[in-house]
Length: 277
Length: 260
Image 1 (cartoon, rainbow over the protein chains, first blue to last red):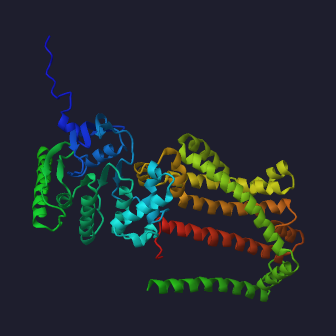
Image 2 (tube, rainbow over the protein chains, first blue to last red):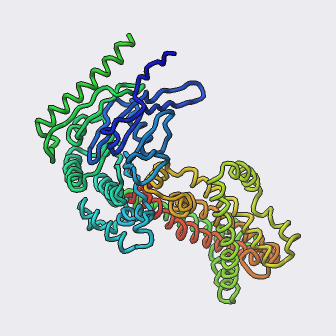
Image 3 (cartoon, chains in turn red, yellow):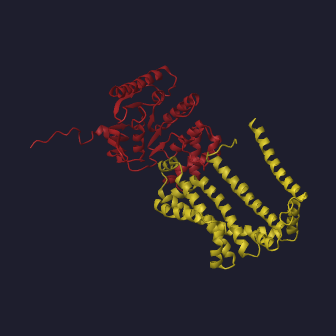
């Protein structure tokens, strides 16, 4: 009897097993009353420890869906996501998500927001002082110590995002997930935030998976850009960005990469339009 | 510019009330209305002063407020717990919402006869009326507040590792606070209606009792004076106590800007 050759190896190669975050043949379909929508076609992706990977693609390509799957807000229809070799189930602060809107809690002031996530950490559970100390360190990192006691509504948009970043980093997550980090900010504030974010990244060496549709942002922040096709989302290509950090968003080399990334997206759009006369 | 027009607006409102009061006094002074049917503002003020100096007014206000303090505390606490359960369980919400909406169509005074039958003429009956008048409003507003919580807060809480048992106390109640305060404010007003309605029939002290005595003695000035006092204290607590808390919470929650 002949056995059909298996198209994919059953055993994971040892080199791949060391990936921090491993997304293995993940599929996601959404079902509503009338139809089934395919958001993600089988997708595999490895993220190494300390790597900054940006998911880039047209809107509706499933990049945010993938982020939600990694965060555990949704379950994959098929396939598995591993963090440090362990299967991901449900949300948790080992894969902490930063949202498009800052999502800070308005009933807490700045420092209490930053301290919030520590409350559920074993090391900080009943240690208010230790929580406060850690939160102050993080506020220092984002240069907001003098606003520790402010209410959230008193802060500007950029300051809110910096507090959100401090809050997300406080429990020291294994992977930081960022969904369109700084969408509604003006260019000057954004450039400053990118510089600050990179500064923090260099210091903490966090593993980051983020989503954007701004090619400049992708080129400025990422070690690797993963380009998606339009819906249903598939992996189109990956672009390694070998530029030293910190990068300036206005640097011509960054702009070159951004142009390259944007060109990938244009191809995708052409394919999309090509099928529909 | 805007501030200026707002100040003018306030003067117009003040002017309106002065005009209202002035024309009321004018009608009475010109004997266009009979003073035993509808007294002049000065008569009302004089009667109010008398009630105050004879020691009837303050104990009555105190009694009504004390009943509200007891009745409404029970009502707000109960309404909050029921509302929390409604907000967290679709089934409980489905069952209780229709019941409460039904009960709310009953005027607050409609609870008075049954309270007399159940509790006789004791103060417990007044608490009963206050509670039944206001508990549904608090519960419904609390559950609405919970159901309207922006999902982003729940997701942020989960990604930050909040365990399920801590969600109600740390996230759900604080996130629903603007809705809860609106409910408490509305509940207070309804409870106030209930308290005065109940006192009309079954008490020997209180604002409702003074209203009732005014009617018994054919004293229109007293009736109008107590009506004004009832409005005044209702407004004071509704607008100034709960209103200010509500506003500061709404500003802090980013639902309202503090510029206006």
